[in-house]
Image (tube, rainbow, N blue to C red; front, side, top):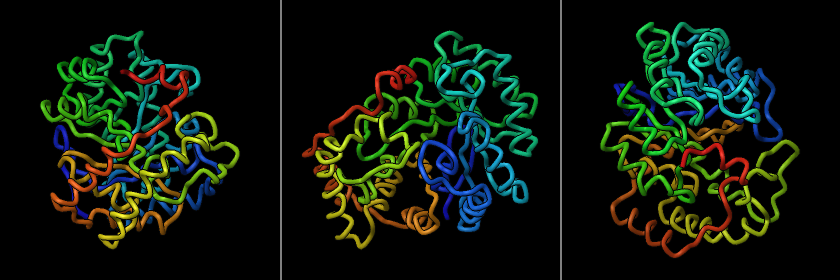
Length: 327
């Protein structure tokens, strides 16, 4: 696995591992022991960048990641997040300085480590000035408890305000073949400031793998059942045209649709590090092999032309969910 260095000198594997789905947001999550085995398998296959958050559970995901990575702590980079009241996303934002410090101490304990490699604000808190948030993380960096500062789903103004106080290493936001909104203003801003982009849901919450269509039924507890209008059966049927086109392109390259989706991100910018998640080791292997997929300029043009011909339908989140996004 090759590496990429983003932001303020954070070097990580070209493809990371999003740990959220190990216990949160989806149905049929693995046992804790199986989740630990998967995380360690990812490391054995070359992954050095692992993403978690106190809100995934809450708290359980950090505990799993901490147990899994403790024996190999010095060989990996761990990203986690603060920003919700009591670690519960349903309660709304809380990025008061005292809460940030509390989360840091509790996350360090759950992660079984003495430092957090990348500490993200999970969502912008309109009640707390960004300068106060960045200033608090700067103090934690000065104390050695945090090494790098990140933001998640932040808009241009808040990115610039944060960066002026404490240089931002990475922005984590959704970005994929079927969600390209960051291209308008976010990515040019990141390029201008030297900030990395860590796309979550780089496979469109599974849709871009080609294994989901309008007949797919999601299990109880799977947030695609209602939190994302894009996943209604009607919208999945309409959006499947994109998957079919990606499948055609993948066939010509001798790879899978998922590998095309990930390779496309890697070829967009050298400061992009996607973090696909999975609970299946064969899917982990498939995702990581995307780092070896070569896309020529002609391939990228073909993909771009295909995307221009397809209109994606359905909102990304419900209105309630969208209120958490800084846009």
